[in-house]
Length: 308
Image (cartoon, rainbow, N blue to C red; front, side, top):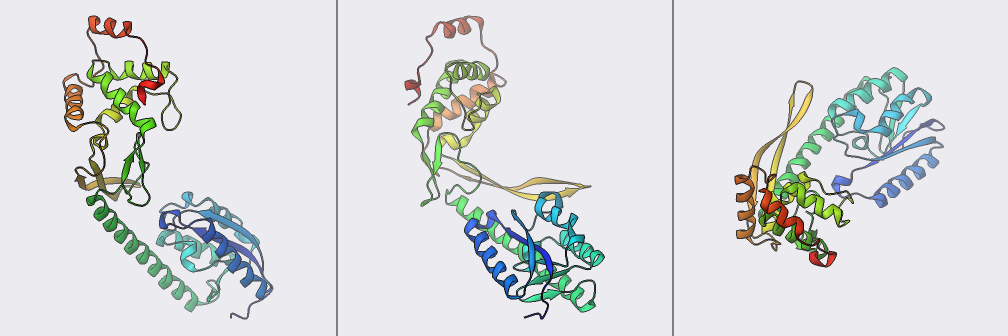
């Protein structure tokens, strides 16, 4: 295709898990590029990573960082396509600058970018990088709109399923996971009986129980469970916008979608609301009367069968 043969370069392979790509995609790209390099008598060292090409900070791309540090060793960067190097305009310009300084070409199966030696290549690189960045932003907007529509339908669209639930991959909705749901019911039961979040955490830890991540329960963990509307069957999705203030990026909530009866409730609505009303009245629920405290201490600890 390009008439350039027998050079030594860096083979950069990247896939994005956020786009649903997996190791099969990475292997397919690797095999395609290895065959391409054999055809042109290229030799190479491989750099691979699974990360979004639209990442704003180069620090989030450790393998690309390593490649650029080693760039003086190579004559070219090999990639499946230009957008696999970056979909972010700022990082694309960093790559361009480094390639010009080290006289390193970027070679894909369909294009050679001789950035140090050809003004036309530099213009084509800039146009292609701009298109990749615009496409990334457009895909991001479409993905966000799709997520919002799915959230309105009651589908779980972001993050790990809450403790006590699992996400059904067919319906994309949350379903109750009883081995954990019993624990959630027990936490609400203890709280409505007067225990503080700290005392509930102490009791669960004393029984040898762990969180989803196999950590001890903390008072803040209990508070988060108590105030999470997911347990009354309500799905809440926050549409966030990334905003730069000075040199730091922040996420601002621009819209909140609340879908009632999105999935089966672990805690009846009335019970959930009563617990949260108590929490507000008790200022977080960290205090108990001495008499109620002594009464609860006399109660026998609950075995694991209490939670199932």
